[in-house]
Length: 116
Length: 113
Image (cartoon, rainbow over all chains, first blue to last red):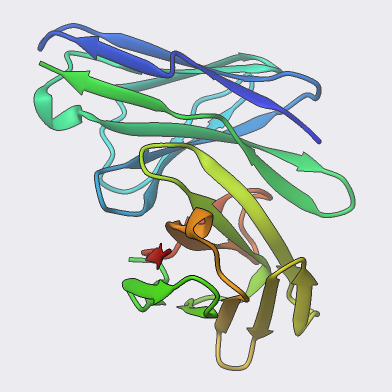
């Protein structure tokens, strides 16, 4: 099946710094990717839709200036958490849809971000 | 919130018993998917059921879909301790971009040996 790779799997950063998370589709092209956030013991919440070659679409309540998304190629989307604060500590996970008769979403392994 | 609801929020059973989880959603859908997540890990795709399907089986898993009630259920038969995880339903809403999923709140399943 299609593979989506996310890197890094874990990152610890200091408050005020920025962290970049990469999401790659390894064996297919993805003009669209999705970014989700999951707090402990909670469900996944869609943050934004990453569109290749154009601006990302953010869900209500998600700060676009804080969570910068770049989708510069058909296989790579990046999420940068800028000026990170402890409350940004969370599990971030990306997905890429793969059309094979019916669109299925393939997920990366997720990134555990801890801001200290 | 567009997020669906799942019940129960937590379920504790003995090995060998069946586990049933329910999911309700709010909009018309293209398909509904079930995922498993072990603590602190990524998602494992379990099964996808299309809007024109009513029931689907995969190994020990049985999924039903009732679009008139906007609900789905996941049945795990003959549960094992290794089935201990959180289970989420996710809907691919009609009219949304393909692959854009809205997740339910999840059911935390604990299977005791």
